[in-house]
Image 1 (cartoon, rainbow, N blue to C red):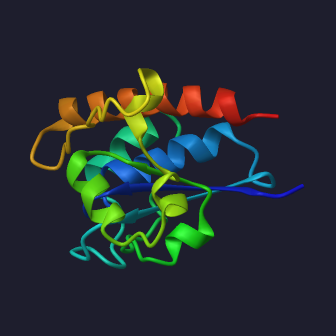
Image 2: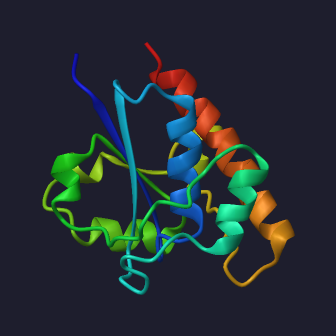
Length: 154
């Protein structure tokens, strides 16, 4: 059976996307699914997730402390079956690297899984916020990942 590969993408790959990676990874079988994350900007390459993302994950039983930030690259279109972005800037930046319609059709807004597809519902970046913002981000990610997980489980 082919492993389904999913990539979560935000700006710096230290807040939203590593949290989404950890949450979805906790919901799916690691033998059937490969979950990863990346950022559209290379500000934090090699860094651990933001301490507040690590904190909120731990509050809900998700350990993302060992993840390291990386930047989204053109080859990710070939490596992944689904690419979930967090906001319109991420969407624009990811699509700017696409070479084909097939690549573009792999890209979705994470929160659109809760609503009508391609509503382009954005998940705000909690980076400049406080713990409350990180909790809200986690809860939105968890809800979207529950929908994705239920649709992908065999």
